[in-house]
Structure formats: structure tokens, C-alpha cells
Image (tube, rainbow, N blue to C red):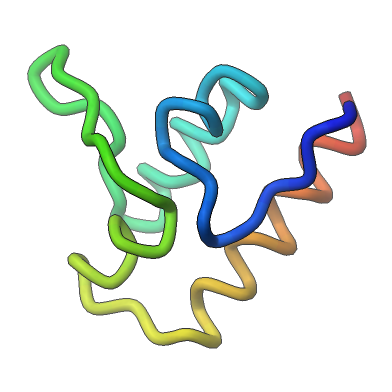
Length: 71
């Protein structure tokens, strides 16, 4: 995988490079897809909207990169 996932990645791009991110983010309480309509914006903005801290977001980025590197 050549795309490094950062907190600034657009949700749409994240789902394209790592489809499993949808399930991971749902497990964290961030729904990327609601009623068939994707949430637009960055990973950071989606997490902040749900009240997550910068430390939480750093963990999401780390976990998502680890998931991506396994594929």
C-alpha cells in the first residue's frame, strides 16, 4: 500500500484505500456511511465531531495504518 493514512485523509479516500476502515470506524463510534450517504470531510473532522481527542485520533491513524500494512 502506498498511501499513508493521516488525520487529514478524506473519509472518501480512506474508504477507497482501506475498505475495512468503515467497520473499524463504526466500532469506534464513527459512522462513515449513514443511510447510504457517506460522510465527507477528513478523518480528524469526523472524529472531532464525535468528541474524540487528538490522542484518540492519533490512535485511529496508527491502527488504520497497521490494518493497511497487513493487506
